[in-house]
Amino acid sequence: MNDCPFCQIVSGKSPAFMVYDDDRFMAFLDIRPWSRGHTLVIPRQHARWVDDVPDFGAYFEVARKVSTALKRGLGAERIQYFTIGDVVFHAHIHVIPRYPGDRGLLPRFPGERRFGDREMREMAERLRKKINKE
Ligand SMILES: [Zn+2]
Picture 1 (cartoon, protein in one colour):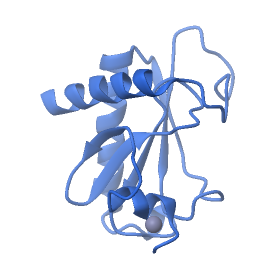
Picture 2 (picture 1 turned 60 degrees about the vertical axis):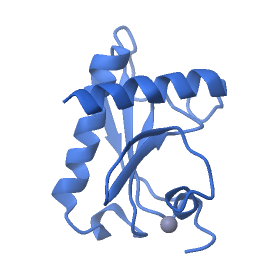
Picture 3 (picture 1 turned 180 degrees about the vertical axis):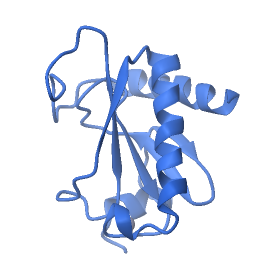
């Protein structure tokens, strides 16, 4: 889909701070993170909803890989997963790290451009390295 922002990332027309990619799935940092390291996991093939994605289990295994990297690479204590789908109409799993002392149902800073490009790049690189080590 030409006007889909995530298909633009898949095709390389839009940049992303890439954390993981394989022949079916990609994971990149959310540019308006709810917490430090907030990552989106998408199928390369456009799908409207998370449960439209073929091989649902493999899809969530990618989310788990990202979670492990968030714990080992950024010190996350636990991970929240959300699938909402009302803003961008390409299936995505929000993988949201929560940190020690970080309480409450939702993270502290939803929806802001919180980190500069350099910090986002460094975060993505650190997560990529952790995933590749597994
Ligand atoms: Zn799409």
